[in-house]
Length: 459
Image 1 (cartoon, one colour):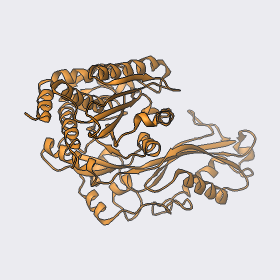
Image 2 (cartoon, one colour):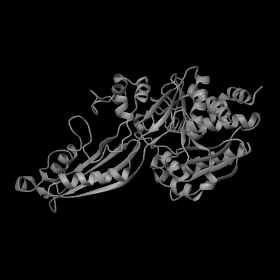
Image 3 (cartoon, helix red, strand yellow):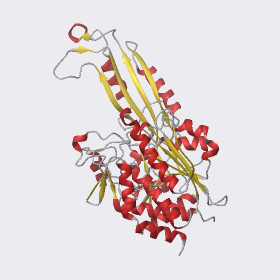
Image 4 (tube, helix red, strand yellow):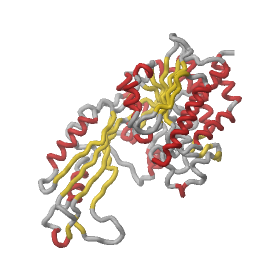
């Protein structure tokens, strides 16, 4: 029997135990955003480290950072002729709020209707444990066919603020042929897919100030420019009637969509009904000339995230506010640069803000978009593994969100990332009643097994 077949057989024989392991990790409330849970994030890190040690990994450590800990470990027994994979994922989770909307306790993993319900069950403990169980299946039946380096962090839900510093200090240790990122998903329980592109992001805050203090709108209204009115006009002007962003130079570096790629995206099960159902919006809107999928995954955007000004409590208070502010973000596509977007925004506000107010634009950082070559050796191996397990050819798709680690790893280590995970679009990640489809979890373990076996073959 081939080594890959032995590993697959082991995984199938230990389905119950492998699901119990996911339950164990999912029961740890490793909420990275809440200081009260710092100890729980540490417990999750310790659990991951203990697993790696049990699998024979060397140099396993729980590394402290300026924020939450991360875990490193390496298994290099496959030898110098085998590829070396840097596996990335995270064990921290979003807060479970609002608690009243959960059917079962968020940190009491519960099986129901073929799913495992728990915060983090899908994002991303399910994906992390799936890969770890694939590793275990090889180790318990023989040996790993690849060299593996694990980099698993506890701050992904915070935007990975400490990851870059750790990588910068450990470049030689983390060197590999490519990065495998498990924090990903497929298009449906019966629709395998490979995520090949992520949008980047740049976040900003615009602060507008006028009078020295809040004023009585009856006494000063009409004589003093209202900062809230100015802010609304400035924000409204950031888009034209066709849904295009009006910031100078915003589209200068946008990589155009080729005909073949648009045809690939058109094959996805993401029609108008899909986007309306997922959003709950009464109607869709977006940049003219593009499909809904292209708008949401492959075109740059600018969206207001929050507004603050004046009186917002119950009842009426006729105030003319002294200040107004808005937080907004831009989703970027290849080859846009966050710094250039910031410069364009400043030029826009300098031109359009009236002299009757003062304004300040605060940049809160950003990361560029990422895109992988779809005919690379890694992608071919992932595609073949998915097709073997699901019995159908996977679809290639893009996601409009951002994964900071992808850009950080590419910039600091100079390697590309393969996104391969098994979360489903309706897993309700970051929302109440998050869940992991159990059968997909087990298929994911087998896919990781077959992928590592395929990528180990030098061709």
